[in-house]
Length: 345
Ligand SMILES: *Cc1c(COP(=O)(O)O)cnc(C)c1O
Image (tube, rainbow, N blue to C red; front, side, top):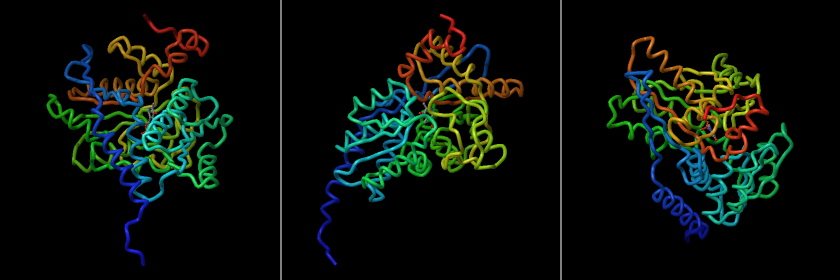
């Protein structure tokens, strides 16, 4: 047996230090408060996850996935890193790979928004684009095995890579920022389900902290989360397509933990798209379609609270920045071509 220090630990320790330094340099994301005259007694809070250095809530996930791979001894100096992504995660992963000096390859559908592909390349990442309908995760896993690369596996590991008890996860961050508010314990928290990591973390944390806050998943109509949630069937499939990126998965992902979710609201794309333009008018900023989906669910829950004569707070997430959708969701031409009404100026 060799008791001398393992030289590979030197790189590991430096990489873990680099991740800790990055976290320490980053500020927490804003929790924006919104009071609407139509809902007296109900306060809305929107957690602006677009404010992360890589523009989306996937910044948290990418940091956790790298940390998880490093601490599991699966990621070594000089190794390539690969993942399957529809874009946002790959942007954040490319950013962290560059921070650690590692080659990064994103496997994505060829329909991925050009702005996302450009962002990954600008960050030094490489993009492998597959025809729509091909299994990007299977391709990424096989590529990793062939090249001895590290497969970050966002869909397989999102739910466990995040420290659900704390470590400033999204739930802990929200509740800390709510502490001085009139209703510091929200009646509802609303989020989407892409990997399921966010809903799993929030749902677990609410129980762990013994809070009565309920968790609602907002999903484009006909989604796999809703179907699986209502039937308990993990083979459930999405039954109608959606243009909302980051959510609306075709099937039940490993991170979809139905037991910690209290309610699912299904939202038509036309309403989600309308909602991001409404948010832009109120808050003078642009966010992606999944934020609109969340916001519609918040308004429905507020309507129910109002009918029941209950006041309180509702918290949701603004998931990614709207600039990525300048040529789609924020283009009058694109909206017209895809059958969406023009936004009110
Ligand atoms: C990933 C993603 C979500 C969903 O978050 P998960 O934690 O993966 O379930 C929502 N919106 C956007 C824009 C995303 O990229």
